[in-house]
Figure: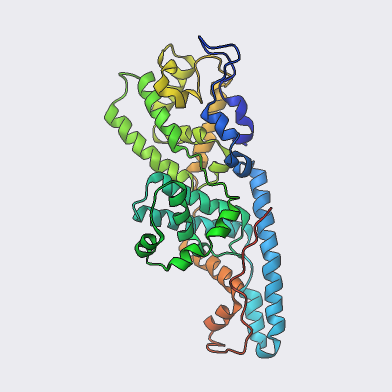
Amino acid sequence: MSTATSKELTPNAEAAEPNKPPNYKRLTDDDLFRHSSQYRFWSFTPEQLTQKRIQVNAQATSSVGESLRNFISENQANLAEEDIKSIEEKAVPVTMEEEIKLVSIYAKKLQGIAQHLNLPTEVVGTSITFFRRFYLENSVLQMHPKLIVLTTIFLACKSENYFIGIDSFSQKTKRPKDSILKYEFQLLESLRFSLLVHHPFKPLHGFFLDIQAVLHGKVDLKYMGQIYDKCKKTITEALLTDVVYFYTPPQITLAALLLEDEALTTRYLELKFHGNFQAASDSTNQESNEVISKSNLTINFDVLMNLITSCKQQIEKPTTVSVEEAIAIDAKVQFCSDPNKLLRKLKRRPTDSSLTQFPTDKRPKVSD
């Protein structure tokens, strides 16, 4: 995993800088990130991430399975054999892979809603991040994604200091205030009350300035502006993938730059490693120099290129789901949440009030 091993892929920040005391050390953004709750709670190896998702799904599947059995047992006298058979065949808990697909679908919908509200890029990114983190701690079988989409966006607005009152937000989204605020505390619990998000957008600004300095006179500023805007969009798309759990924000930024202009990014990195220039000491380029420093390098160029190339390839392969598959997965989730929906759909119990109501508003479990 990149985030677990990339400490050795960063400059030797402990080396004394010119005209500074021998014990002087500059605290970098990378140092801050590696001491952050984001790094502690939300950085994984691929194996760790898979195991976490398997565990969350298994716990929810067990709970839902027990609830379904209790529903059938309690309503045995009112259920025909065909009803029971339909429940057993169609109210089947989704698999871990299906959960990932459903979360991806709603994360994309969330992105569209946030952008439709004309929210800043950072707020959109934080909304996506909060939403996807929630479903590392909870299963879609416990909480349907559509229930917390707006809650996540509203919390992200507050977290990023983009003030919008609940009345205004409710009016713009055309949803009752209660439905937006209902699950906010549960969302906070699942996020472990850690709301600061280290986004790849910040290092993008540093790299943008440093590329212009390193390649001074060799890049068109208008073109660089276009690259910058494209990279912001690419980074937002990257937040919809698992690269955010495997790589540090600057690594994701470099992967986005590589994706938008491989020749430019490769040339820039080559000069940072092998070129003769003074730009690396320019204080305006501090953010990028925290990742790549001309002096006291402990990073291998080939290792870095392999790292960000791997990240780029993962960004290029987002989770895709067909409409038919999405509908089928969503139906399974809803039928598991309330088998009465299945029976009504089959038109066997259109208005039957004799059946025990299935508990549909359970508080989602929050992992320790």
